Amino acid sequence: MTICHGLPRAVPEEVGMSAARLKRIAPVMQRHIDEGTISGALTMIAREGKLVHFEKLGLRDIAAAKPMEFDTLFRIYSMTKPITSVAVMMLYEEGHFQLNSPVSEFIPAFKDMKVYSEDQTEIFDAEPEMTIKHLLTHTSGLIYGGDSESPIDKAYQKANFYDATLESMAQKLGAIPLLHHPGTAWNYGMSTDVLGYLVEVVSGMPFETFLQTRIFEPLGMVDTAFSVPDAKADRYATLYEPTETGGIQVVERAPVSTGPLSFPPSGGAGLQSTAADYLRFCQMLLNNGELDGERLLGSKTVELIRINHIDDAWQPLEREGCGFGLGFAVVTDLAGTQALGSEGTFSWGGLARTTFWIDPVEELVAIFMTQLLGDAQFHAQFRVLTYQAIID
Image 1 (cartoon, rainbow, N blue to C red):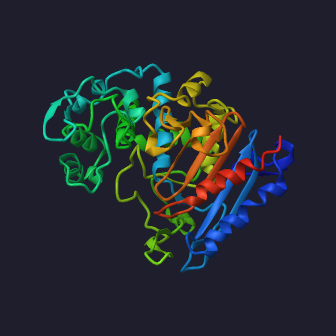
Image 2 (cartoon, rainbow, N blue to C red):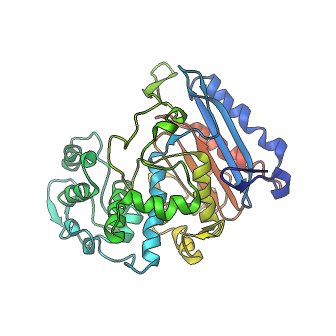
Image 3 (cartoon, helix red, strand yellow):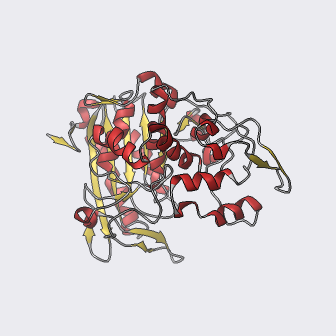
């Protein structure tokens, strides 16, 4: 029997996992649903290229009593970033640039960038020049504007980057001083958004067209896009956030209108997808760049992607025991993570508490999907529940 667009399904014991132990996942996740902290969830685990666990729990819309389904569409937010990073590395393989190529060779707005002093009272010339690798590793000096009253945060808030085109976004970013000199610190920000525009410039086609024709269609990712058509709108999950009293409340209800989201296609966020689609993307990476005869990347390129490229002292989003590869967090010290797993595991997540990880040592992919703008202790639980089921 097959499921998930052709990914074969296996009895867990056939790939060294315990069916009985995998049954521990549902009660733990159901407890969060019963407590009202999430509306529903999808959990998915594949090992050795075969699906061993795919479970749906709770509701995708509480008010309408719509159950979570295997084909539910989710806002994956920053899980867009790994896809963008793969697109960049595909163009790298074709010889369009080197990782140390200056961004300004392709986006002139990034020539002669400025940088703030540490206290943001002075502005200097940025040195060295920002490179493509700086963007891939989030060491560029670009940030996401927060709520502080600092000059750089105010500039980001005023810029309204998502009101027009990717080119407009890049032009605005190029005029704002960086938080730090490129390559001197790790800061999560709009680096991957800029990479989306880089793909557009280098490929000569709209960013969303490149993703569709070069990644989604070859991999059979039939439900991944920057928009949700009318025919699929009813599958779209409602987005929730925690309340002060411990429950959850609606942020955005499904179905949504057709067409793009409130901002243009972006390298950093905006894709809508299903667990099944994202599994195919992850399995391609676990297979060293190939899935079902479609090769997106060479094996040595995937090897380069999934190793740490940043200073050991820089902890991505304060994740102990982790470094950062070319678009992914990477486990560099398993003891430091204080969690089950393997060194070399690479991963990322999205704002609405979607997450995935790829473990090359165990030949394992795990995906968790929900829609909640809030804390997610269930991620750590899901990780333990996944690894405790490995028996061989």
